[in-house]
Length: 280
Image 1: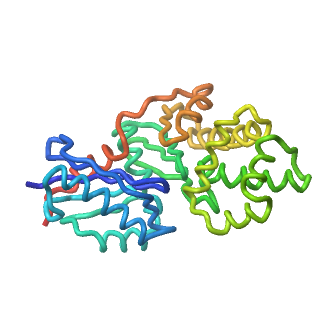
Image 2: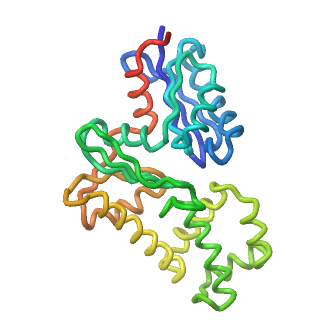
Image 3: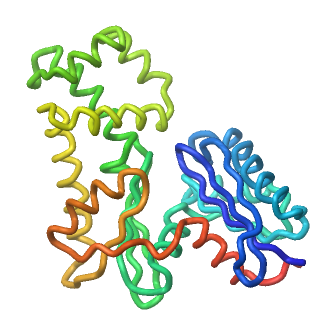
């Protein structure tokens, strides 16, 4: 029996689901972060953990499985090919995580996807054609993402400590908790994107803090501008997913129609896997 495995892997964690030919979910599994660009070896460990959990529940073997994986870093061609070659499934395709998120959230209709969690990426689907925008990683892009928000928060804490930006209770608390400038710099030298993203929780917890409001307003403006560019002269429905999706949905619904997701990213991956056919 041929089974279809969908995996959604991002900077925070990895989720897997396995289905039969009718789309009935037979098993699910989870794993750790799965960014094949920044940590390819760790990503494979996470992928196999999530896939194994799903296959055990479904009483399946890798030889039965057609797998589609939407992974952070999946837009890097060489990283995607290496990952495919390292996995044991009968047939395997690695895609950018935004591709499966868009398929799950928008289905086959027209719309814009705003997928923002640890990282961020945007997608536009019109007439069956899907275009991806952004998703360049938190050092060079990923506007509005948790990792970028966390990095910005620490940067503002240091700038305020130097007197270059307005200080606030939140920024002072961060400097104290992290051991001042040296502690913040040491953290920045070693931290993964997911660790930066964890700091973004403080922006929500202390949302009345002046610095938190300033940072979140700037991020909302960036995301709104991106959607405005992608809309062009149209009025496509916008779907927001990811851990920060609800926050940005509240901002974007002031200007555009915000539609709920039709399904999850793993739903999208399974749908694409079912289109790949029978393993050779």
